[in-house]
Image (tube, rainbow, N blue to C red; front, top):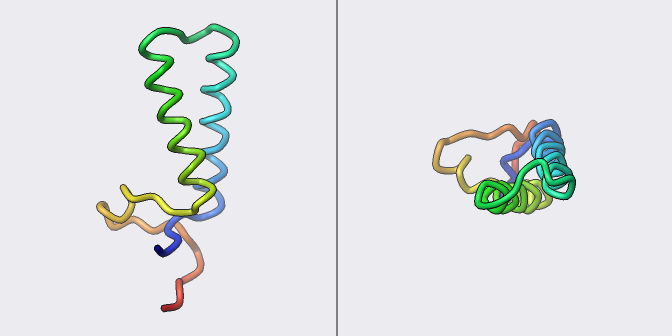
Length: 70
């Protein structure tokens, strides 16, 4: 599995995920919308720590600045 996410991309995903979590715990979002957004924020955090996004592979996107060696 090659890294395909750059530092900026990973940072933005983590900030968005944390914002969603804060909105949930301050009861700004609730119900089904909150559950869907929490799942998305979990995916954002997971992909950020792995530096790999499967959707990027399908779309042919690579925001990682360093080329991976085989």
